Image 1 (cartoon, one colour):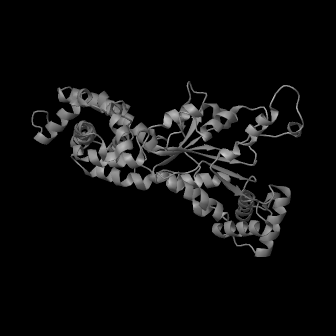
Image 2: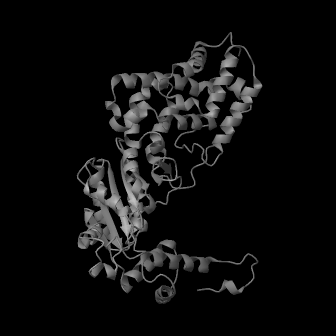
Image 3: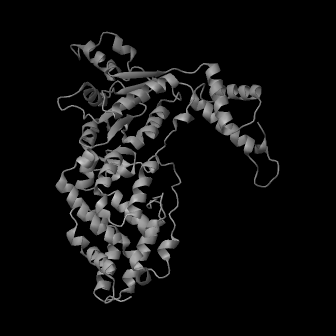
Length: 461
């Protein structure tokens, strides 16, 4: 096929694709991808009658490099070659005025914004189909088809939300018709990095502070948690109210270490992420940055929980004052789309010393006011959920449940005996101790020496 005898359909697609860089209103970020840029460069030369094989090779190489990288597209639910997966990925996760407005308003975005987005999508759709239309000229060896998209190795809570829109883009030839569909999708999934990731960490070391995606968050399925149903139900119910836009409380999860406080918060994210919940972990050392964190999240369409794990303060720390101000409500106010969930092993979050109870020196005219301010921090959380340490029967029940789920066939009396011995030498009684014990038990039962010979470490439990 030569440039002179191109069909009308192909000719129109080529013309639209070549014009895309100059005519896009919003989706310029898509064109900044090296593979997309390489394709446009090759196409512009090819349309002018210049055969530049080095540009073609660069396009194929850039596409292959991104398709096979650790942070590749990872799009599934449709039969996509490497180029299709890469291009749809860049379109879905582009952050621009249209996608960000759609996150807040969905199909209620202004009509002019929707029309401009439709024009962009028409141009992008033409660029998307070029490798398929010009396969003989661009990819005669079928390199793109040979690069299959592997499924993600980690669980992805957003996969059910993403699959339908990927299938729609892959099967639709007139992308301009999909502007309202994408607007609805961004309302549910978010825009830019918030559509791609569900968990973030606030990094105060970055200039001015920044939200950094957690690429492989440790998510916990609620079914993997045992006991403490009443405590978890209170946290989940509060979160569900939050997701529905009803009044909800900041939550303090208090209890002994290993009782499942942090796991409960991670299970909340696992359950509600597909419905638009995101989570930002704020290290204790960065609590003074909370106003900056709130500013970064304010105005977004998604709801976000700030997660502060293992919260406690020494008597001389002042970071708690910033948190206390946010919990109480400053003049500026906390954004309605943000809550704070914190875990702690201490009921009184600020350390209190015996010396604080004695009459102090003349350094403070009103010393009791200062002590009361520190001790009242926990009371500023609207909901406190207590995770008490399990008694022996509860601990053994947790051990049995985990062992049964793992398919471990161990006599009940022997299982109990070993589980109680574990508490003496390790973490005491807690769900975490039960899980670590079963981990150890499973490895001992299933271990086989590489040499096939009996060794000292090959003793059975």
